[in-house]
Length: 437
Ligand code: PMP
Image 1 (cartoon, protein in one colour):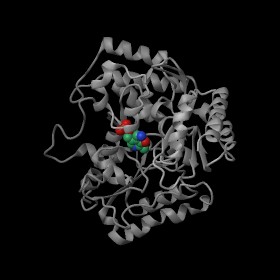
Image 2 (cartoon, helix red, strand yellow):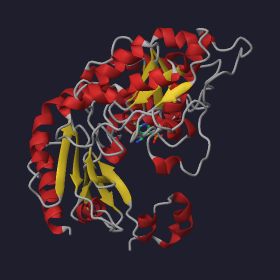
Image 3 (cartoon, helix red, strand yellow):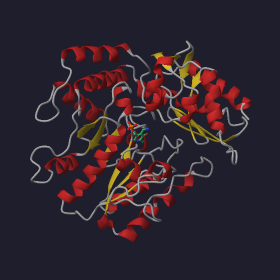
Image 4 (spheres, protein in one colour):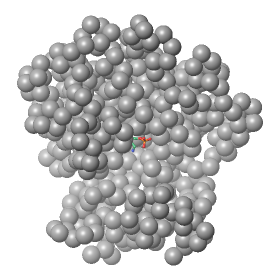
C-alpha cells in the first residue's frame, strides 16, 4: 500500500471508485511518454492520461507558456472585457478546423461543451421561428459527459438512472434514441446505412418540426472504441440536412489528431453543424473546451432573446488567460512537431501491433483507427470482476497504462509515441492476456 497516511482525509471525497480506495495508484510526476508512480516505477502511458495529453507529458513549451502567462496576466473578465490570447486561440482553432466552422465558444470541459452545444441548438431554432424544435436525439452507448444535458442525450443507463426526469425534449422510449453502432468489427461494415435509417423512423414518428438536434461521437470512445460503420455518418448527415435538424459531433476524444486529422469530421469527410472539443485542446493540462460553430449558428445564438442584453451565455472562466496560453502552446506543438501527420503515419504500425494479439486468450474483437485501439474480451458470466479490469491491473504492475470499460481494454497513446513504445505496449499486453484467467 503506497497510500501516504496524511492523505487519508482527502482520499474519500476525491473519488468514488471503490477499487481505487482499496488499492490506490498514484502518479507523482510525468515526462513525455511515461508516468512515475508514488513508489518510483515508470509506467508507459498507453492512454494519454484520459485521452487528453496528445503531445505527451510535461512538454517544456506548454509549461513555460503557462508560467509566463500566470506571471503576466492571471485573469481577465470574460464579459465586456477580453485579452488577446483568447482571440488568438479562437482564430487558431478555427483555422485548424474544417472550413465551415468560423466561431468558437469557450467552455471549461467536455461536459460543458456538450451542454453549450445543446443550448445553442435550441436557441438556433427558436431565433429562426422554429421554437417547436425541442427534441434532442442521442445514441445508445453514447458518452457526452456527466452534466444533465450530457447524461440525458447519453446512452449509458447507469449514468442517468438516479436522476429522474432529465432534459426536456429527451426521452429513452423506443424510437427516440439512435441504436448503438455495432460494437463488433466483424460483419459491421455494411450496416451503417441501416443503423442510421432509424433516424428516419424517429422523424416519421415525432415529426421533423419537433426535433432540434442529433448528437453523436463520430467514433465512440469512452464506451469502448466503437467505429462508425460504412455509410453511417454520411447517412446521418443526409437525413438531418433533409429535415432541418442540426448535427453535432462530440469530438472531445477524436479532436486534435487522434485519428490523424485535426477533427474526425475531416477524417470521415462528413461535416456536422457543430463540433464539441476539449481534452487535447490544452493537452489536458488546464481545463478548457470549446464548441465550434458555423457563422449562421453563431449569429443566431448571439442574437439571444431581446430582453437578455447582457448575460445570456458564458462562464467566469471562458477563455481564461492561462488556459488560452496553454491552448496556444499546445496547438503550436502539434503543428511544429507534425503530430497529426505522425498519428496518421503510425496508424498502420499501431494497427498491425494491435491485431497481432487476435489469437491471445479471451480476445473476441479488436478495433483500431488512427492512434486509438480496443481489445474486447469474452465476458465471464456472473463474475464480479471483469477480465479487462484484471488485465488493466496486471498491465499496470508490468509498467503500462491502459484503460478499461466493461469487457473492453482501450488505448489512445500520446501522438509522440515511438515504434519501440508500441512494441512494448503490445508485447506486455500479450503477456497479460496469457496470464489472466
Ligand atoms: N464527450 C465525450 C465524447 C467524452 O469522451 C468526454 C470525456 N471522456 C466528455 C464529453 C466529457 O468531458 P469532460 O470529462 O471534460 O467533462
